[in-house]
Picture 1 (tube, chains in turn purple, cyan):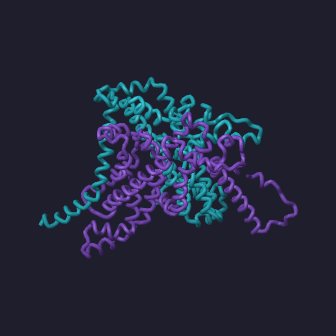
Picture 2 (cartoon, helix red, strand yellow):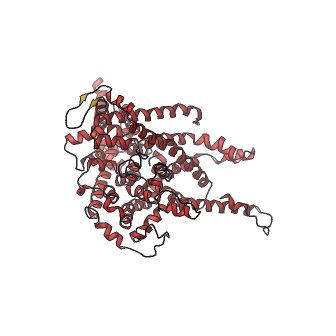
Picture 3 (tube, chains in turn orange, brown):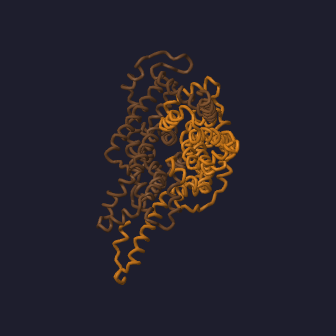
Length: 294
Length: 297
């Protein structure tokens, strides 16, 4: 980018202060937009390829398709072992239940850690922080054996039950931080008015925690929607496949040349994440800044 | 007297434990497998017949398992290159953005979006074609008269394409750095400029020390996550770790051993070896932190 600096213009008068500031500012925007184009190009290329004929995806280099092929979406929808709405529904059911589970179980735990005094609170809180650092792969083999013994293989239980048991410490931590920022007087006032801890939680604290819940919901949506390892491990029946598992079929030999269809369904699989990102950006940015979650 | 004090205390305990009930259940789901996995590491186990004690046999096998060594090499190279690289890019871009740029929110969104998508199957599949023989990258190189190889299908370059995929996600540490940079009082820089400190000097003496706890936090987190990479290797090679084992990440090999060959004792031993390696890197990180992380209190 410094190349653009080495082109002096003789006609320009002595650089006055405002001008001196404008030039670097302009260069900065050129640089930042350049990085932005590189960052977005893979996505734009995917969208463009989803609208090209499969045989011209790698020959038509322009982002603007010379022939528009909307049929990719219709053909891609039915070209896998099940129609695509099956996969979308499966993913959606898992995502919605995971969000519900995370919100319920993590907010209960967070309220206990943030607001209640009980024996062993510090120890349990330290354990919770410890599980945040624990690499999940250590647990995979015994968990698989356990789910096999419970006859949960090829069901959604292995994917859903952990979310109802507050196993993701990041969300608890996020909510604890948020609840600690609420004034203690709220709880005291509720107690004087005769509320027990459950009423206080449900009527006073929960409604105030909506921003933290929104952050949790969005992060859960994105991570569960993209999740690949657990469905790969636990789901073998194609009727139960989630969207990422289904997409993988395009890599098998029959799907190898259906590039237009593949990119069409790939883009469909990303669209909800992009939508949630645009709608919930505020919460995402705040959430990352407070917990370092990604 | 004692009962009068302990009764509300006990009631508080009961409320606390009730709220934690789901979490206790979750801990059972984690603590039992944690110790079970340690036990299985010392056994032969194929899921169908009960585990038989094998002593250190699994660990001894690891010493001679060339595929395991390859998977360790892939994972360590990936981690050691991609984590610092993406953190440096994140910091550099955050610093440019922090100096009051118009349209900050738009740039931030554009840079951040890829980190939400990079873990998805769709993007890794896309990567395979972008870095394919007739992909976009080679189209671009062709402008300069260079005919590139099929990057994703060449054992020499396949891992590099995944490192680039990791760098593509610099947006999430960048958002954290931006939040951190905003905490640094502007007067530090004003005082430094008045004393004639150059931009580089200001970066070395103000920005870096004050941001170091956040850089450290990101480093620890990214290292732990990066050692467990699975999806990228699985999807780009369609489950094989190829071409030529060049994308055989440690966890992909663990998956093949445990869930394709059902050699679950060996897979557990592998899991514990990786846990030890991650713990080792994390401890070194914390020890090194004494020399470069600065806490302002």
